[in-house]
Figure 1 (tube, helix red, strand yellow):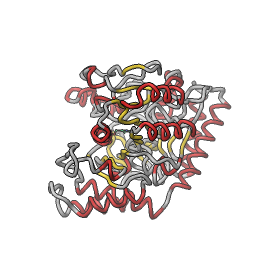
Figure 2 (cartoon, protein in one colour):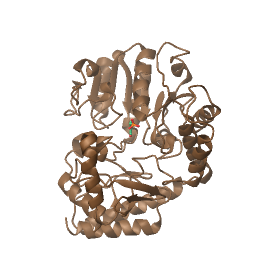
Figure 3 (cartoon, helix red, strand yellow):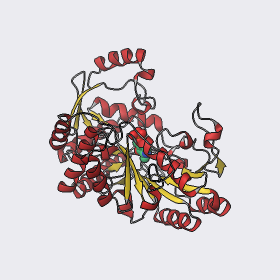
Figure 4 (cartoon, protein in one colour):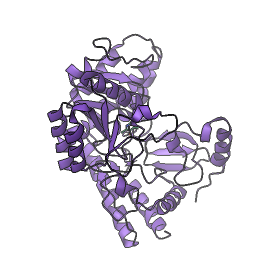
Length: 428
Ligand SMILES: *Cc1c(COP(=O)(O)O)cnc(C)c1O
């Protein structure tokens, strides 16, 4: 078992000047207890903490590092950009190059605007959808996360057709009054909602493969109904591909499933580890944003040269190397072996996966949406998590997160992960 004394001491120090010791709550170990590892550096598929432990990383900064940490071409591009300055507040060539790359890669995107985070991307896409349609209502799904946007921070309810109730103090009820929260994959509830309120709905936003309640796959019927109902009622379909873009396929979930949303939000991989978000889609819709149209959206650091260099280099390497078939094969083997080991140990579980994203749910039911996801055995997960961490396997510190395999993970890494899991399963 690895020692984590320095991390614990540093976390106590951090907690005195940073709320909860973290700059984003997903890092805080709230779901599993204990304290996070304080990271000193990353290299390829590994993180190294300040105690000197090497951790096999299945988080990749929560998605961005599909190429592993410090890919040489990405680091070279950032270094080169640094030589020319860090920010100009004026257009650069790199912004156009990244925009062109996105337009060529993501099937439904004709025009795209850069922002600084996934949250900014979804917030802006929602404003644009409302401005373009002249309608107010946004439909979202329980368990999908779209960043900490006021109008999208709506508690997953019972899945009933209810008006949104804010899930955080500080979000006035007025901000979520026009948010309708439905159960993922429930075609009936979706079509009932459109039947009742179709003419009020500006947009439906979803993760086309959910990562943020753990991995949940959409059914083909659900995807088809979303596209058909939005088109029929004049609502915009927004795919939040902040996590799935360039991850489940180079062209994202929309390429994988052959469904064209009206708007798409991107983040994570598109910045290659730098703070980048983007939203794009139909040119007629995108031209409603300022300065062409009336919907206002801006950013002092948007299209930042270092961030553009990092994103562009990442996408270029992905295009050149096409790691997707290998990611698919490695991830399939990992999930298959984990599942076999859990079954052998008599542990009820399910391990859904799309490409290099997966979640091991301690739940015997197929997880189709939030109602089932939240019945998972989180105490068993917490024990599993700590057992794996003690063996140098760095997993997400919550049952309700996806894991990511990178292009750097080797067959030996996968064998080591399965072996560690076997040992831990025997203790659960
Ligand atoms: C991570 C994520 C976001 C938020 O992105 P940030 O960069 O953390 O603001 C939004 N949507 C999805 C699907 C995400 O996975």
